[in-house]
Image (cartoon, rainbow, N blue to C red; front, side, top):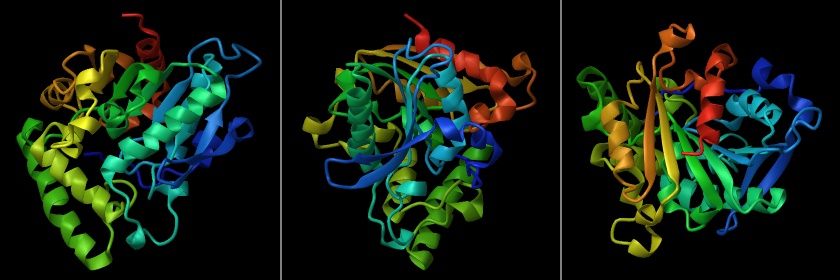
Length: 307
């Protein structure tokens, strides 16, 4: 589950870096076209001295929300690719109520295509995957996962209802298992923006979201009964989850529920208190806001960690 901003437009967070953004198209194996932005390492400082970074958004958050952070990463020497999943932002084709995208396809198709594109463009055999919330939860669905050298999940967990604090659990269950399904029946899509859950979503994406949060294990639910498409047990790369002490979604229990799905991976968790960085709050979303740049070196350190 993701409490996300509905106004994730370019605005001031990305406008000043617009000249460095290269709009790109991604073609998925099933023919779906996605829109993204490539941010090359800043040639005036550290041109591509580090591994490329694939920046995968959270559920219901458009790529524009991350562009300022992507430009900052490029200043640290990384080529960066960020994109919108099918049915979201620039990748939405036609009316939302006609979009048949699923949450599973965001991993099995969209992240796969983005990873392949970045490998080809940068000529690096392995890249770093930095995923926000759901963006860091789907590596077990990627047949090309060998091209990922490390995963850093920011506020990534399974969003498992039973692992949330009781008060927030009730709210999350009511919205995802009650309000959103009613909205889908009325509108033909999930009106998430009406309940402060970010961008409106394709119906099937929202349905799976609620089902996976209820079941626990998140993306493992996409491959139950289909072992040929399940790569969770094959993931042996380092996985680091960074989450905040005031995050109602990525709690110690929901983070642990995610990491248990990767039994062979080298795993670590970094829990961050807002006050330790001069902040009043971080929550689930604020990591990538310009107002929270004090946190960005922590994320960069996690990307570069040799452990």
